[in-house]
Image 1: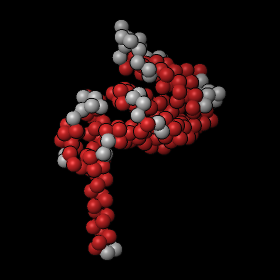
Image 2: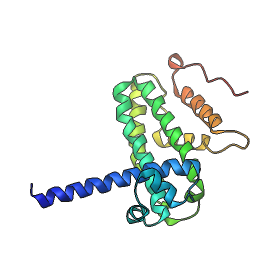
Image 3: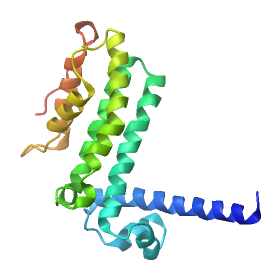
Image 4: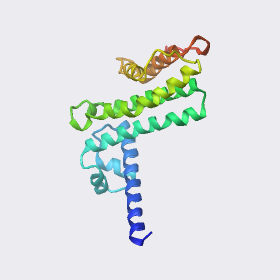
Length: 201
């Protein structure tokens, strides 16, 4: 490897670290301050300059989209990891819990995602293309194990969970999580069902 090639790889690695730091910082700041947070708040948390932010993400929509795609990628990557570490039903349940958490995180991004900005138009397809096959594999494994019913598709379940995560007036996100837990338990065959979570008081 030439010295020039080595330098180029180091530059690329540094640039990727900056991108990763900015996306993680933006996720944290968006959750607390909202998508309109000052750029400096994000760059200070990431440990980079404002110029670095705008070099990688010229528009705020670029950064929001990167945050959403990063969250999707993390949920998708969790599928094989959970399958390797847990029995099929438990892997499916844990993955649906992570998907639910992703939807909860996106609440802070709602003003941007629902703004009509064309930058976000492909996110739904991006998610379905990546998450659909992963969830289908988890469902198939759990059904083959006799742990869950075999008459629901991955897209059906993705849409059902998304609908259960729509904000409910007067309720926090823990309410939505409980509804998803009830749905998840309903997928199980009788001998694999668990006690439902206790209702809120």
